[in-house]
Image 1 (cartoon, rainbow, N blue to C red):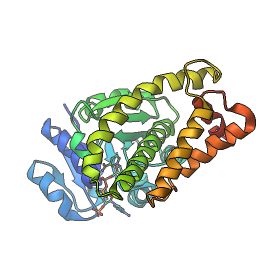
Image 2 (cartoon, protein in one colour):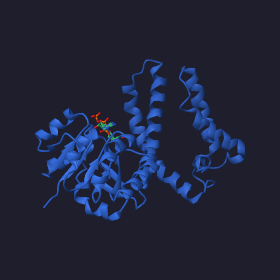
Image 3 (cartoon, rainbow, N blue to C red):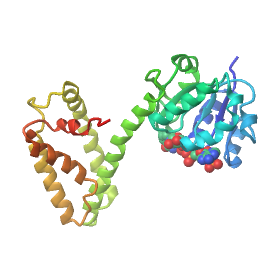
Image 4 (cartoon, protein in one colour):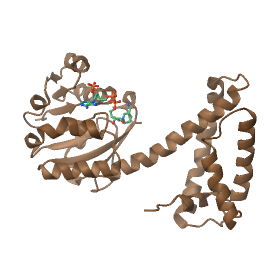
Length: 289
Ligand code: FVH
């Protein structure tokens, strides 16, 4: 018999997760701080509760998808004793150390804690292009695969509860810097009246084709081999970035996004690494812990 699943948090993402469970006929209990957001799920067959206590009464896993780490504590701390013996799957975005802190909190209360990081937007949930990263107890991951796989591809990264979040954060660094770069370019052409929509039509496919170079960069980074032939040199990259800085300023566009990249490359060249490959940037960024 399928046990019920409790969903705490019915924002855009929490609602999508609960809807995917309901669509497969999974008994689901839902709670949200602002009750209105539960109505649509109630109409689809979910049991709507007014309190967190009511929502977690009984058995089955508890899926938490709230705004942030603080809101998770605000919701689960008052019911910690009642969650003893249960499995909590937290899909709220947190830092790795926040996830580890929640795992410690859970262990202190006899709760099994699986951390998850969602690599998708709500409309992707339940579709094959959605992925969710997990870390924490392997048994909790394995035992709940039928639920987890409803939402998209389930990737497990080991017992350290912070690893799913670490992978998530690392992926998001690439995404946010790419978005900022796109917006910088849009501001440049926008200064001449070109629409961002027009720009995006060309920028999108170009960036997609550039991702083909990630594997080569990764090979150089993993091997710590930056002198190899075939890599674009730091000197070349510095010259290119100089042009981009000049052209941006000529267009009246701030170089706040570009300057950090330019400065790192410039420092590497000044330190005598100009003939080495551009992947050497990673050496300037490596952990300073
Ligand atoms: N939406 C997305 O595209 C992404 C993609 C990848 C990962 N995330 C993460 O998922 C978490 C939830 O995101 P969301 O999109 O559902 O966010 P909202 O629609 O803003 O809903 C937020 C829910 O959190 C509740 N909440 C906030 N503070 C509290 C609190 N102190 N006590 C109780 N609940 C709280 C809020 O309740 P209400 O405002 O409706 O009453 C919503 O249920 C998030 O970590 C993303 O990073 C989403």
